Amino acid sequence: MLCRIIYTSQSLCDERETSALVGSSREANTRNEVTGALYVSEDRFIQYLEGEEMVVNQLFDRIRRDPRHMNCRMTDHRPMFLRVFSEWSMAFLAESSTAAMLMRTLLSQSEGKASEGAVMGAFFYAMARTGECR
Image 1 (cartoon, rainbow, N blue to C red):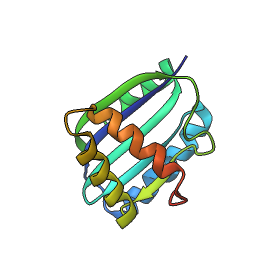
Image 2: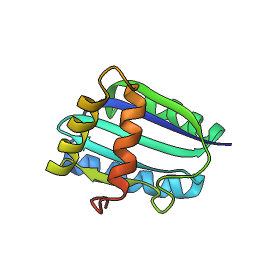
Image 3: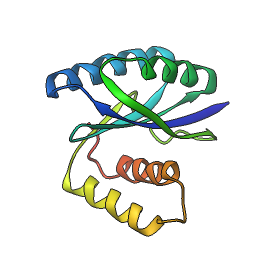
Image 4: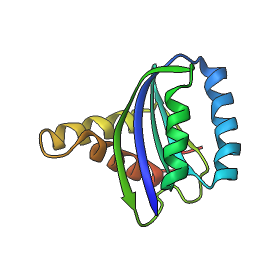
């Protein structure tokens, strides 16, 4: 069964280290049939992972222990029927005015109505269609 996990954490990486992290994640995710996206905003990581449940859960356990970030917190874990990032082993979304505006809009419109994980899921779904992924 497919599932998705979304988590946030505080990045301890500089731009070069983040770029290397994205590259190594793309290679590992291709081998493990995991797809998803990483959004970096200032010193925050927000990552969306999707794939077979056992594989994604094991990956998240490793991610949680990774010293390149801290304060790792899962915001969403749910079953899926279709992948959002089926063409991306790891899409990279850099901070942009479009992303910041979309996140603010979703958060303000969902106040008290949706979970943080649902808001982040909507954010990644919308960003996957903007053309800003690299």
